[in-house]
Length: 385
Ligand code: ADP
Image 1 (cartoon, rainbow, N blue to C red):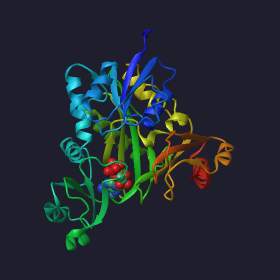
Image 2: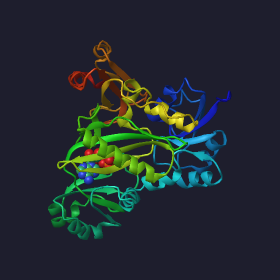
Image 3: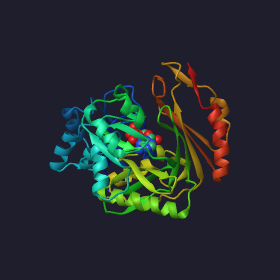
Image 4: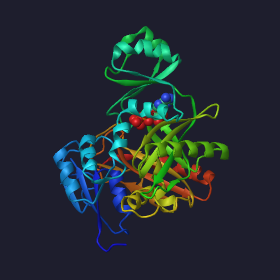
């Protein structure tokens, strides 16, 4: 290994960047971070912090000028600026080509169809006037409308009843370009983190299953390993590898999948970065998803992805009743529990449903993890400080 530090530039200074930095302190790296908020989780940890918007080309170029390699921890960045930099020879992982596809749920769906990757049936619409035709063509009782751009954490996603929308067009929630897709009746939602290094080697983490909060559209519980048959596990991994292979770039990718009632696997979406569904890898796997991405960025071989223990992950979300300073209500009770790891992201203010931290629970078996996670859930809330 070269004695000089590799300088990694991260677009985005949120919790994903923070955990990347925390998890790779043992590696020979330095971090530069661009973010538009001085109070963001990364500010106190970054070697160099640039204050600026992730859409500001000048600021991105400033970050590139002091970094050997760039990555991003959020998709809503100026992709054209990154594409220009890549063309000029800057190393950017994953390639911004992929960002262009992922940023637009319409292009993403088209990408899956063109590469024969199974996904739910869908139609693309440009505006409200095209909804009626698309809904009729889908022919499903329920469908999901997604704005093509700028949605995140379930915002810009709406589950609708076809009959109701056809009879009452004022129920159409979005006017711009959208994907309308068939509602998938899921048995489970699964996620596979796939890591691909610069040498072309590729590894999957053990599959996890997620439980969603139907109101907020956010992961509430996650369990690893997923409770699925070997056949389904094989199929899920094969589809995830096929999708990442088609993207044709090194990087760390979270592939979100639906397992339908008749055991078909459909791809929902891919995040080209560390993901909420991989947080447990910090305590439960040999190499965390965060260290893995850093290894890829600096040209190291992939670390081992095995699960050492069964795990659950619980998101700590801001209370819906207040905004402002906060503290964990039952910190002492949680600290006394065995195999319970509290991560707080250091955000200054709580806002309703804001991701403020997470808790990982580990144990020898999935049953033990599940019962411990339920207890933890009772203590996992914030109060005003
Ligand atoms: P985001 O990018 O904001 O996370 P997603 O497209 O992943 O949005 O949708 C959020 C959640 O909505 C999914 O995890 C799933 O629970 C639900 N969902 C999305 N698409 C469908 C679908 N076609 N059928 C059923 N549920 C869906």
